[in-house]
Image (cartoon, rainbow, N blue to C red):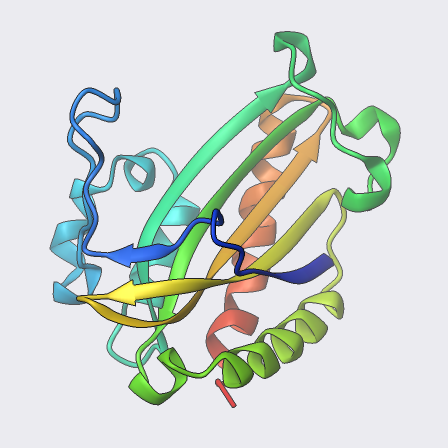
Length: 197
C-alpha cells in the first residue's frame, strides 16, 4: 500500500480541537463533535458513517474500549475527472493511468487515549513512522494512506494528534469506492495494533 506521513505545525495549519462545532450558516447543518467513546448508539449522529459501512466500522473500532486511539472528526468524499476533478497521480496510487479518473476517500482525526502520548510530539512521531512502515508492507493497489501529525487541543489541553487520510481510485465510481473501502479495512489493523511507543 502506498503510505506516507508528514508534520503540519505551521501557524496556519489546521488544529484538531475537541469539542468543535461547525459555524452557523456554513452549509454543514449543525455538524459538531460526537464522542463515540460513549457507545455505538451515537454513531447515527455522524452523517458520513451512515452511508459508508467501512467508515462506520472503522469509527466504532477506533473508539472501542480497547483502542489506543479515539476519533475527533471525520469526512468523506468522492471525485470524478468527468466533473472537473484532477485525476489522481498513478504513481502515488500504485495504479495505471486508466484507473485514476474516479476517486473516493475519507479522513479521520485521531487522538491518543494516553495523556502522556497526547503531549509528546516525539512519541507520536515514532509511532507514525512505525505505522507507516507497517502500512507499506500491506499489498493494495490503487489506494494510498497519509498520516499527518498536527497540533491538538482537547478540552483546552494542548497536545498532538493525527489526521488519517485514506483514498482509492478506479475506472468507475464503484471501483474507486471499493478500493477506498478495501484500503480502509486493510489499514485499520495497523492503526489499531501498532501500539504507541
